[in-house]
Image 1 (spheres, one colour):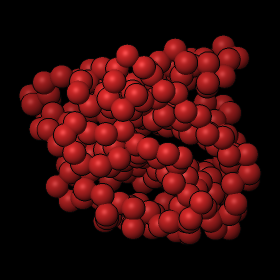
Image 2 (cartoon, helix red, strand yellow; image 1 turned 90 degrees about the vertical axis):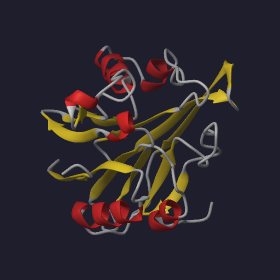
Image 3 (cartoon, one colour; image 1 turned 90 degrees about the horizontal axis):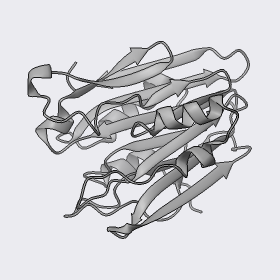
Image 4 (cartoon, one colour; image 1 turned 30 degrees about the vertical axis):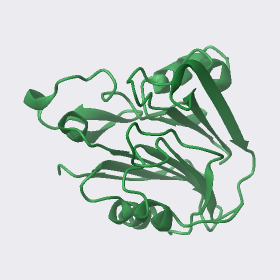
Length: 235
């Protein structure tokens, strides 16, 4: 698979939707995680990321303009004793709860499917990053827009090479209806030295009109310390 750069992927895509990047730093000492949200409707754009004790959550920027919180208010990132969970929906909690019972993330996601938002049937994308830097990505999506069939795809990366990562997002193209992501997660370069540098690169590459919020975290694999950045369009 060809190694790509995040700025090239994002700048060439007007509306990738929501995206998860997991990888390892160039010095091999840090695990990298990034998550962003975009929006086309006023309801979807009316959000910010907010830190919590175990990660982040989405919150309405203007509560008076929130019309339907069902699919847009959730915890995108939760950290447990053994891993970090990153998703684009409330399946974050499903994965956390299954892991707490000693079950696997695959079992958790087999209990879920794509989002109930016809005609797009937005995919549920999820990532689990372990304490050793290995990670897993998955996507639950309809069969080319047919909600009668749910496709569950799982990808596991045991020992990611330094300076590389994998990127998955919800929408393949900005069309009507929005087509789901196709193929394997993209192999991408992860050579930014810290969270602030990567956050700036990603934020500046996202479509100005549609970008909403971004979270980036560098976890030191030696001591577990975190280097985190949140950028909200509604600062």
